[in-house]
Structures are given as C-alpha cells and as structure tokens.
Length: 81
Image (cartoon, rainbow, N blue to C red):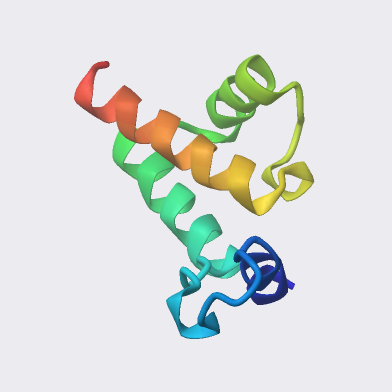
C-alpha cells in the first residue's frame, strides 16, 4: 500500500524509479520501540506522550506518516529539543 501511495504522488510522465522508497511500518514500529527504550519510558509514559501529541492510545492507530512523526518527536525528546 505504501508503494502505491508513493507512486500516486508522482507527476504524470515521471519515472517510477524516482519514487521515494517508503518506510515499512514494521521498521517504524521497531524504531519507536528502540527510542522508547533509550528514553527509558514505560508503556504508560509512551502512551501519555502519544495521547498528548496525537490523541491516540496506541501506535497502531497512527498512519505511517504519523508514526514517522511520532518517532521524530521521540528523537527530539532524546536530544532535549
């Protein structure tokens, strides 16, 4: 599905080989697991952060782009932004 969406965003006549390779959901979830671990947050802290920023109680409720944004927010927490 992610590949189809990437292709649909291309302009007519564009080379499909130039489409960005989408991140796989499994990789995004694994990355957020790592970030949460590095932050040493338990499930409650992670859920509170998720609810604060996305009004969702589970990462499964996020789209792939929202999950990527969630990971970027977690990275920001790591560097103290």
